[in-house]
Length: 377
Image 1 (cartoon, rainbow, N blue to C red):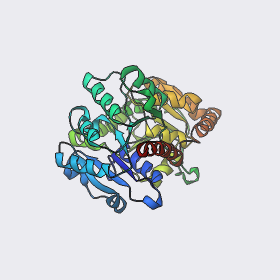
Image 2 (image 1 turned 60 degrees about the vertical axis):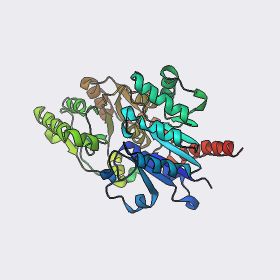
Image 3 (image 1 turned 90 degrees about the vertical axis):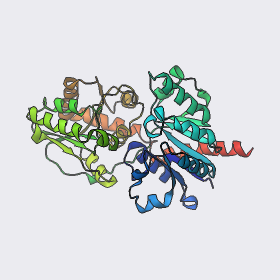
Image 4 (image 1 turned 90 degrees about the horizontal axis):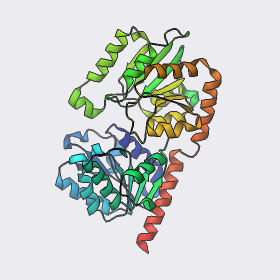
């Protein structure tokens, strides 16, 4: 049986890559190999925190930025596996643009599958160099959208024969567990940070005060740990002040709790619309978007690449960045038009039948089988 290794952030770290790796490892690692090997990426030793009992049994060692001893331990742990799945994002590894990952990959003899979460259209020369070298050292490169693959082809010197498109996995939400609410509900969730564009969502909501029943806007999620370290709660405070300034504080709920999976599933199922007003024009992958579509909830999103691609089937509406008027029009059309919402829900559920974590894990398992067979040959 294949012994998988995983290099990524991992719970108790709270970020999208940690959640992604937990879900993928849960789906991939079978009973006969239930421990696997997880090497958790950290900024500092003190970030270890108090892992839950399951994480404590699965995390074998940590890769700590600028710590050469941890790099050696991480490489040894990964080399004991049959295949290693590496999550790549510039901001999680040490060095300029996370370039310390290059040394780790170069020392890893085990075949690696590198999953790219960001493929910048206009990288700096060093960012391009780092990503190109990461792809060269990988046995297989995975991106989650065709748009990301096209970006690699257009802007990076990468062997496209080793690039595979596997969508972001999703947990299907049980609609029967929805939280009761009065009126209509618009939801944005995820770790909070500048660039999420929540201020544009609040400004859009100010244009919907004439609707009856009233429209409630819930922004759910803690402030991103890295933002909290450097800027505290200044972004959350600004959002609350903006709602007051616009006179809609009673209709905007900014919930700073970290919700567990069941709480979040119930909240998603209770939403009439999911709003993703992100400022980024480069975001190749959004787990929040994938989960919203999987839940069959209509989506209004700005035109970042993953939204343009995933919503093209009719599961939602794409609007211009930083345009609260366009957001308000799209929200109003969905909220007041039941046929529009129903059509989007049907398109969303058709879109996600092959993106459950078990289906996605099967595709990683097929890649792994080829790598293991090639190594044994």
